[in-house]
Image 1 (cartoon, helix red, strand yellow):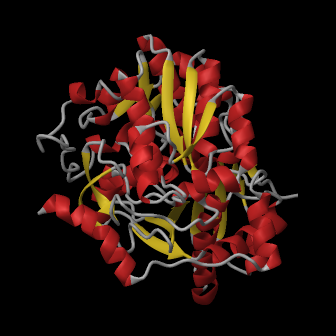
Image 2 (tube, rainbow, N blue to C red; image 1 turned 30 degrees about the vertical axis):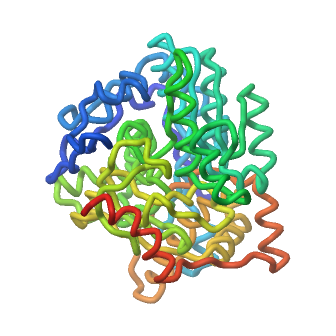
Length: 454
């Protein structure tokens, strides 16, 4: 029987995160204060984030950031995650490509999100914070942070995008199991939520809206800080444990990836698998391709603009230089709730601008078709978000079939879909529909960002 899994011993869990900002040829443009439009200092972020996370956010010089021992101890519950050769998927496709996936679904929270949740909860506890708030789209980040907060003895409040709150009741149950307080967003509990519901009482929410509510609660609650599951630099930093492990595992397999693929919402799992390999493109002249797979209903990389924009709908965050379709964007209620964010992370936006990565967009029916094939060949039902990475992987593998090239493809399986079966029911029944932004809709949303750059 062919060996499929490559697992490192616990002693090989990374001892430091990789900070790609330190090696980028072009540093990201500065994050700006929303009031003064001047570059932010770490101290400007202290009212919202933990101090250590704020410092990591703006660190452009230290290539390696030590992982606290307390965080590594928690990582040891599920890391190192398996690297798997997908022989049966290769056979089904008839491709000469070698397909590998990093299986982040084996974490207690069922996704990669726990890698940063544990770090952020630890830094909050270390600083003496007693409460943390956050937003969540599909519920994977909310579930991960709820787990991490319970591990470190901190109270957690989660604003969940209302569309997902209704679509994914078991994600809510996971958060409640770990004793978090969950509120559908937009809500009447914050000024940001009230303003949105006053205009549209049936608003189904967005990640931008949920971020606004979570930040408002954080800054108005004593001894409370806000945490984020994607987009920001310190979050992407924490996720590099994925790629650092995968480097060693690919060496065990005797191969090196020609193509690295991940789904893309704000960029956390993409950065996690890509950054460690991308440093070899930057420093050593490697030629690996990096592909971000996003939904066609939220095409910030494939159709958005690179400009300054708010990270939330209410305009409470700093101004971020990023690919965006506008902070007023109202996403379609696709099942990949974690990918419905209007902007890309600052670092990834600069890397995209500089040609170190590329993007592809996919309709949700195409991604579920790919996810079902993966489940039937590899035995894992993927999260709707991860289905985008699988669709991109299949596309590239079929290109190899046409050309006869034996390329090595690595993708990140960011999470399982065991509590997303209602989405699969929709696909199997033929009720699932596709959504694609029209040029008119895109222009309307983009105007909110364009106005900030005039």
